[in-house]
Image (cartoon, rainbow, N blue to C red):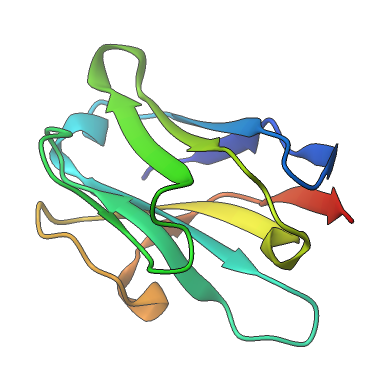
Length: 124
């Protein structure tokens, strides 16, 4: 079993930055593909970013390319999402997720473990 805890959300003005962290319990963190997903009010949960087990491969949704960066530190059982040039449309609850596989996925339903979510609000 893996438990995921996100932190780092908050209120920021448009153009600002935030860094989200996700700390995982369990010794198998380094063998799992990980991702960040978000859900805005009234909308479906959507893919934001994913990273391979080693951190060697990263993937970003088109809407955040050039602004967000995903990374992980397996020695610390931690994954990060650096968010720059934030826009009001980035406002959502952001979730950290893990998949019991080394294969990265962009599909929310294919993740096996989820954090509780952290709210990110971007004001205009």
